[in-house]
View: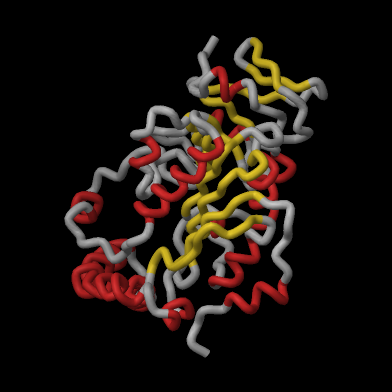
Length: 318
């Protein structure tokens, strides 16, 4: 029998992603009272509601590639990518995690945190990982070095009010129904639980067929309208947006894989410096109309932000 990678304490909070009934583990299968069954492979529970997901349980049992590739590319381009300057930057991410940690530590001395999209270590997550008091549950729709369970954010397989905090970085653009996923985050958070989300606005398609939605600053705030805002702002500025647009503009001219690799290298070396303007531009209100992405830190609330109040929060230049 495989031992699951998730801790016993967090395992006790698991529920059926189909009906939310409690799960029992036996013979390497999780099963609820309504006879919904979910297998475990290599110690990782596959807790997918197939009726409400792009993915099927069989995809993971057969180790199919879903969002991330299962193996690292061993090509010349993969080696060159490591030498290329990055065109992306998030100046706020470390402070955001510090603030998030401070907020959840007010709720509990040993806060439980769910990382949605946690198959790989998220940007800036080190401060959370280094805090031994924090108990993490890390799940995704892909296998990875950190994943403890496979689940789809449309049906989070944890009981109501299970967590003190939820982190969801660069995920909501990749789900079919972001509002449903945020409702699930709201459900699994305790009263006054805290969410930290980071989501793109001005970015081209990434993630292939698993890329659906973008949000303005106000669109992102409305998504979390059932949360009291602690902080919100620009996660990636206009300089980053410009670099991405330039790169994808050049890629539009090529058809071959080799051509795309060469253009990508050229684009990175000729545009990476634009991101440094964002150190200053992210502080300007006009940058909200051209930002690459936004973050939100909020506390679960019984109040809902009205749309009339929402539009008063506009920070752009027009």
